Length: 161
Picture: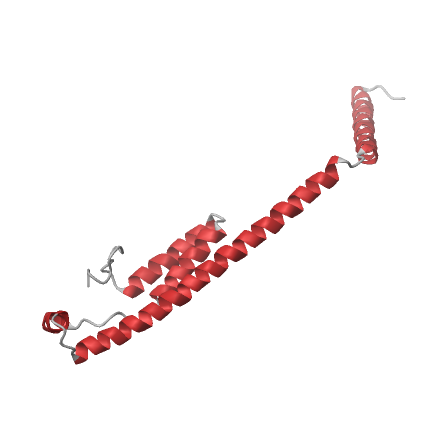
């Protein structure tokens, strides 16, 4: 098995346990707002949603290595072929996601750059004047409230107008 899985770390836990871990990692990534990582973990979970490769035993492996085909080896090759098909689909999903993510990012950057450019030349004098009017009304309201407090205190102290 190690000869076939060259370059890949082998996780001996069940596929179900590995898949659950990927789904948990996906949820954590979503909680942290990392949609890209969440999508990658989801793709990895999809790849793990399959039957495990059959254990064909050491005798059958020995015969297979010597070039003698066995029924168990045939079953293993069929299962491995299906695994490769799943990996191809997952690889395609990863590529499509990367392309889509790049396009979305490009559109977002273009939109933000366009907005920044539009705002650069904008005349905000009307907005500033409206903001100053609101601030002046707030100051007037504060003065009015303060005057009413002063009148109430004077009444309480026995001085009346």
